[in-house]
Structures are given as C-alpha cells and as structure tokens.
Length: 236
Image 1 (tube, rainbow, N blue to C red):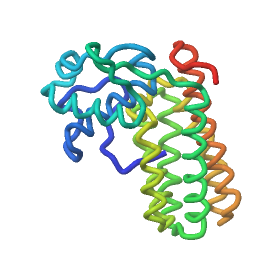
Image 2 (image 1 turned 120 degrees about the vertical axis):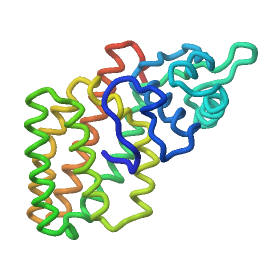
Image 3 (image 1 turned 135 degrees about the vertical axis):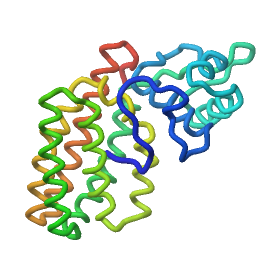
C-alpha cells in the first residue's frame, strides 16, 4: 500500500507534523479520516472543533473545512446544535474498501511484473531485507517507511498513472500513519511480500496479481480485527 503523500511515523500527530504539501484542511481531513478508521475517534462520538484545532495546533477554520469534506464522504454526520458525529462503520465497509484497493493494487503489480527493471527488483529486494530486520526488531515506523517505498516502486513501474491515482483515492482511507498501532501489520509486510517478490522475479503477472491481492486482503482483515477488539466496528 502506498499513496503519493507525505509520511510520518505511527501514533498521533501534531500540527507541525502534518506536512506542508497539501492544503491544511485536506491534511486535517486526512488525520481525522485515519483516526476514525483506526478507532482513535470512536463510532458515535462527537468531534469538537475547538478541541481538534487545539490538538493539531491549527485554527478552527481548516478543521471546519475538513469536517465538511468528511461529511460529504459519509465519515461524519452533521447534527444541528450538536456538531459533527462519527458515523459508525461496519465490517463490510472496511472489507469493501480493501477489496477495491486489492483489485487495483493487484492489477498494478501484474503490469509491474513485466516492466520492472532488474535493477529496481534488486533495489526493492534489499529494501525488503531491511524491512524484515525492522519487523524482527519491532521498529514499526521503519517497516512502514520501507513498505511504502516498496509499494510505491511497484505502482510507479506499472506505467499506469490513472490507475495509480485511483489507488491513491482508496489508500487515503487506510490508517497508514497509525501503522504501529495495528497488530500484525508489520509482520504481514515482512511475510506477505515473499510471494510478490517471487512473482516479480519470475516476470509472472498472474502470480504477482494474486500475491498482491492476498496481501491487501490480509491487511484489511487485520484492521477489522483491531477495530472489533476496540469495539469500533459493527457487524455487517
């Protein structure tokens, strides 16, 4: 999974860590969107504009604009005289998100299998070795950074710019900046990539597609398990 967006480590962010490439309202929306997906903002809870602005170190205006964006997406709901409330998610909602992502990422991997240069395969192989060491050491932040670069390289090699853009639209709902809080994500990145790399080395497009789809679905199941443990996702 990789979107063409600024990265940060796991855990909560402050205003100074929101990055500077996006509009501030979009960055706040991204933060809230991810916090909802990972259960940091629980289903049915109210989001207080002034509290969120203080937490992120920004003014109230971009927070209001961000909440309007999220309202249009269905992530929060406006209630007169009460403000914005987090809309509950179902397991089906999360499954659907990852199913769409898996389909697109799988197709990109299939195309990359025929287009990745030997040098790029060697480069990401070395990154994967670093990732496995980081996962063994429990360094979730470094695993996330390496994972992002591996997926970004595969996606770019597909030479499918429109499809990559579509993937980025789905990835924005995945709580990548809370990577270290999702149990099993670091281990999945270390384990699942083996089949993907084998397919890329063998220039086997069909196997690359299958391996990537399986990987993304696995990540989705782990997120659902996390949310169920916290009581932040409803049964379908």
